[in-house]
Length: 181
Image (tube, rainbow, N blue to C red):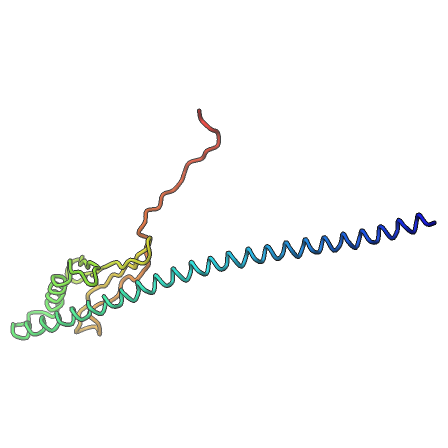
């Protein structure tokens, strides 16, 4: 009978120890997984904060350029209106055409804050565009449609204000299944 009692207490001590070891391993595993998840969340939030900071800096710079473009368009509109008041007005459309031509002549190729402006389009649809760098691989693309200031409140209408990629994408279409000798 002594042998049965010794074996049963040994089994009871072993099962409780085994249970404690299993619980410690489970808790350690969960702690490591939690630490890994927290570290990846931190690195993701850090990259996201950097991206948003770069975007808002580019957006702020684009707004400053837009303010200067607005001043130039206002000056151009005043000059065109003053010149047309002195001359005989044939049509209302000629006001827009001369305003667009004068604005395009003043803004095409001009650099504001080291950002080159370009004017493209035809009469009635002249577009001013520029790109502000946002980080190493992206830029904020801005396109403005010049409008008639007598018909609209503004001298322009924003056509595009979007973040674009400036780096080339290179696809890897290779499949290395069997080494070729």
